[in-house]
Image 1 (cartoon, one colour):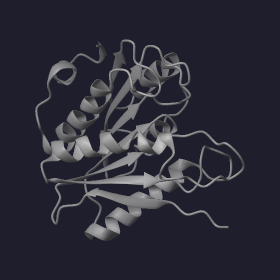
Image 2 (cartoon, rainbow, N blue to C red; image 1 turned 60 degrees about the vertical axis):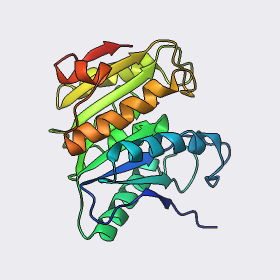
Image 3 (cartoon, helix red, strand yellow; image 1 turned 45 degrees about the vertical axis):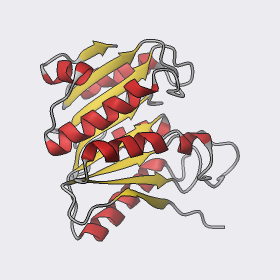
Image 4 (cartoon, rainbow, N blue to C red; image 1 turned 180 degrees about the horizontal axis):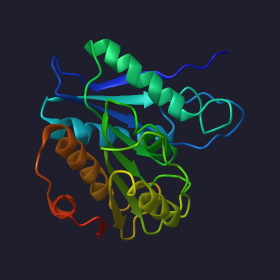
Length: 225
């Protein structure tokens, strides 16, 4: 069976000012296992996508991507699925639109590795599972926000912080450490989802940030909340 990625509409106005593509995580359970719309790694991104859509006030097209397969392997990665989705979105709207990628865990890694795409203006990586070497070629000019819980035992906050330092040599990067936050983002979920929504609307619509994002916009690049 050939596995295919799928694009899900969350909010698609007729003439959006920008696009937000939401990417899920999820480790591989067995060889080339299909992504289920009901798996937890997918479901945890649904309220985040909806919050972004509400924050966009009808001005942003918001999509969720279901990857072609679970996990990350050497033959096909979620980065390829993200590129497929960006191409499909451009076809749908007649041209590439300014885009913000929002991803969790391995979806955060895919978002960061897709950051150099020409339509991408910003990336939000939530509890990203990354290596410090995950720096895409051609990066420069994008805004990147990494949000990681201090109690994450699945994706290393130390590795994402090391990557943030590497990325900051090439583009605008901010890092938020969420006290008591875990990989599932259930603890202090409003902080994770709120930062994703505010950063997307700030990047694509010029909306002013509050709280931690206001501190970032004033120049603070390492924030603890």
